[in-house]
Structures are given as C-alpha cells and as structure tokens.
Amino acid sequence: MTYDALHVFDWIKARSGDNPVYIWGHSLGTGVATNLVRRLCERETPPDALILESPFTNIREEAKSHPFSVIYRYFPGFDWFFLDPITSSGIKFANDENVKHISCSLLILHAEDDPVVPFQLGRKLYNIAAPSQSFRDFKVQFIPFHSDLGYRHKYIYKSPELPRILRLWRPTQIPHARAHPVHRWLPHMLPCCCREFLGNSEPEHQH
Image 1 (cartoon, helix red, strand yellow):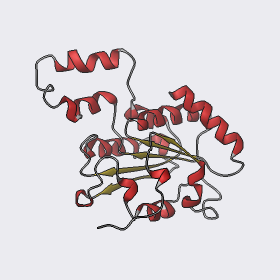
Image 2 (cartoon, rainbow, N blue to C red; image 1 turned 30 degrees about the horizontal axis):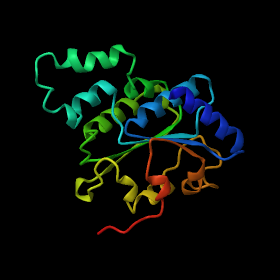
Image 3 (cartoon, rainbow, N blue to C red; image 1 turned 60 degrees about the vertical axis):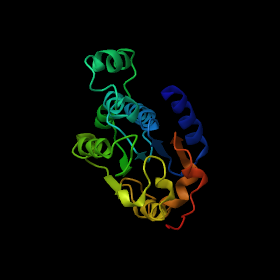
C-alpha cells in the first residue's frame, strides 16, 4: 500500500502545479500515511503537511487495545499467539517510529470517546512527535474532541468546527499559506482511508 501511495502522490504532485499537497490518514490509514510521508522525507520530497485522524502508536499497541481483543488479552500467551505473528510478518505500521523521521507540519485529530483507537494512543503519538528533532522547524498540533460531542471513531468530519480548525491551522514553511487558506486545499489532499469527510466537507449543525 505504501508503494501504491507513493505512485499516487507523485501523480498528484506532477499535476498540482504550485498548490500544496496534504496527506490525510484515518485510523489504519494513519499507518500508511506515516509510512508514505517518512519515505517522501527520506527522498527529500516531503508533502506540505500531514494530518492524522484517530491515529495509533503502532499496530501492536492498537491490536492489544482493539475491542475485538478484549476477551482474549488477559489470557496467558496472548502476546505470543496474537501479537507476535503480526509484527514477525513485517506488519508494523509504526507511527511512533515514523514520526521521528518526518519533516513537515503535523496535525493530529482524535475524539475522546473513540472506542476503536483509544484516545490515549493519539495523545501518546503527539507526545512522541512534538519533541522530535525532525519537527523542530515545523508546526505540530493536537486537537481533541470532547466525548460529549459523540464523534467516536469516524465522525469527526461532522464537527462544525472542523472547517474553522483547518482554516486556522497554518503549517510553517509554506510560503503561500496566507494566500491559500487550508479549506481551499482540500482538492489537493491525498487521503489514506479517510472515508466520509471528503464527501461531506460542508459543516453540519450539532443537535
């Protein structure tokens, strides 16, 4: 998936002119997104910014926290039987390692009542990224959504505040950031498993 995403990024970049390109990953797609952006930074062609929605630290911690594992995680041998095969097969999605090698602005969005990827994993990822030397010249921000809002794992796109958050979020080292507000950049985003938002970008009223 990472190599497919690389080709898609190159295709978009070649056709986007001087417009900025964002990478937006959601849930498991945050693993693809950080894999992609790490490789882009290593080849010195980073995107203009990375947005992670409901991210985890790594697939091992996420699998251990996932609701499907709740009845198994306290059994003897859980790590050996369930978690070790995942990592030994090369499936890591190591967001916590990748962010140490990423050099572009980073925005993390997470709902406090997320039942799939625990909120504390998103906060932990931010705490790893924020002091990293790779981000020393770039903006790193964490936006929590209160549990009373009911956005859970996949409904942050419904937030009436989201367009405003994107407009006010000003990534550093983008020379034309003031001329092109973030909400105008949505067509130039490369989403990784960010389902509904791109089709529902108009703000909705809360009830």
